[in-house]
Length: 119
Image 1 (cartoon, rainbow, N blue to C red):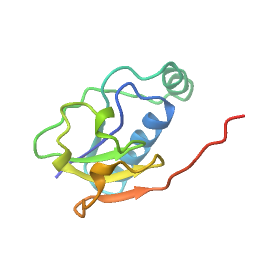
Image 2 (image 1 turned 135 degrees about the vertical axis):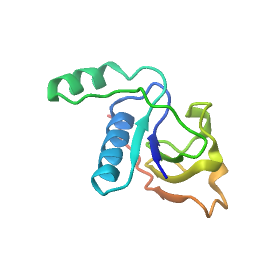
Image 3 (image 1 turned 90 degrees about the vertical axis):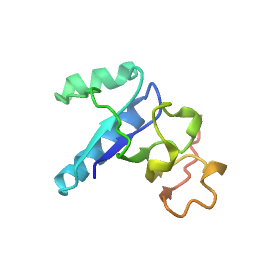
Image 4 (image 1 turned 45 degrees about the vertical axis):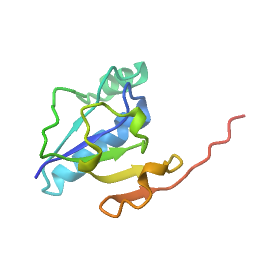
């Protein structure tokens, strides 16, 4: 079984970093994974990845048998249409939990709501 770690469409640094890091963690733990994102990563992602020599590729596809891990989002509206919500097995996020997750015992949900203070 392969896990596909993904985030919202047109991700910024938060989404890309979480997606890339968790996929790397899974692979180094002996669990097969890859990452997928749809759209264009924000400019800061390109700058940081070039600065540190990190290759952020987006050439993966999602298969019907893939298990999905969401990072930095738990909103279905922000996801690619190719993601089947019934294949989501894990969520790691810091945004407010959305109602579709109520009574989803088959998903390992890790949401720590963080409220940022903007000055």
